[in-house]
View: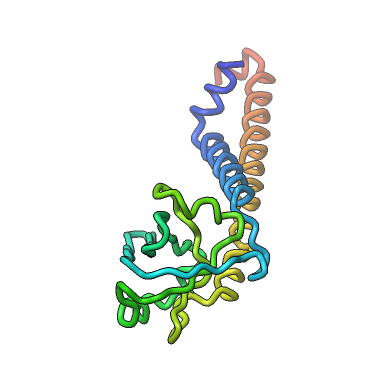
Amino acid sequence: MAGRIKSIWNDRSSRASALLMLASVGLLVAFAARPTVRNTGDLVTIHGTLTDHSFYDGWRRSHSYYVWLAEYPARFQIGADSVPVFAKAKFESEAFPGDLLTISIPSEFRAKLTSSSSNVLAFGISDPNAVYLDADSAVANYNNPLGSIMAVAMGLLGAILFIVRQSHLNVTANAHSSLSPLDEDC
């Protein structure tokens, strides 16, 4: 059994298919573990005084966007799904420490508000004069099925690659085993 697994892993095509299937399972588990936010009715609003923010845009389109409020030790994270609808430039030019903000969060994250080591997903951010992150748009992006469709497609592609490669190996092995000793001398 270990030899079979080792031979599969040593084959580049089989290794690629195994990695695709593992990544697919990982993504599907991550999607299943996310908080359930179907609409803005699943959100609660909190109010607090802005103390700081950090908006980091990394390479390969990675983002780390956080906002801190004086009343809560947790930091509020603008999720990757919400970055495209977040008015970052407007926030940076109009929101300042000391301003009162209203933030919409999933109701199941209320308990995380008192922990300084917690990230609380923000689905809406506004002040009395401006909306920086529209909750309806953020929820729509969050529920976009494209990520889970891609995860399933990756798994299917990995499985198809594996099946095709294994059937090719079986055909090749059968062809070599059917050669007569005279055929091998040629």
